Length: 287
Image 1: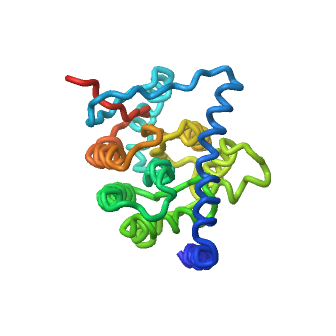
Image 2: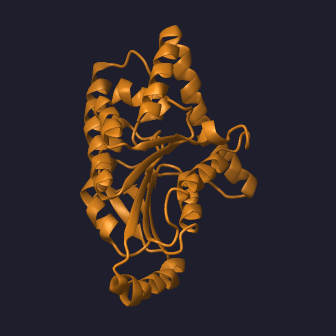
Image 3: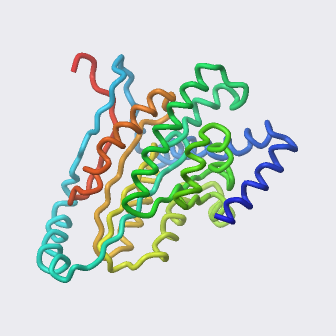
């Protein structure tokens, strides 16, 4: 965590010199990824899915057991029954979070310029602070936790300290590793923020044994981190992958409900012996 504190000292220095410019620069770095994703899908000829609005304020987890995972799941089950269980081999769990619009409602805050927020927004951030910290704590109880962002180095620490001080403290206390994929790979892959995340995810593999049964959980609002998680899963001999897709550009109260729902179901997600593809969707009106 000493390295994290060093980052914070640099962040505080930049903030004091020109706080508005620092926030705008780092937020633009983060949000540019959303535009890149849209352009990338267009180049591939894929129509980006539009998330339909409705009057419901409730969310549900939409579990999808991927059909192309069936053979793999059966294989893993046999390994567990015939080998891993008998030999009592250890296992490892990795939980990877995105930051912007997954733990912090960054796009929403951008509508206010990130500063001089009205009282009602500050109250909503208080609730978000509780919900996000609760989920991070739950994840840290079952394994190692990472926050991998395409924003600039220092943004997670700075924005959590500014808007969600309890989350900032949890990151410190639980030794959650914060990684700026932009910082590590922008020079190598200019403009390709999808590649930044893939490489940052792959870097994690070197810290773990690849032949140990691995439970990989990934949460984010973008397909970029979901795709990166699948790339990482292939680096392990035997892995279950559980991806949780949040809605894009949430309002703070929407993000609170999503985080709370995942927190309530986290143990079930963690212990489920299948690879899962999960989407957070609004319930249809009247359902």
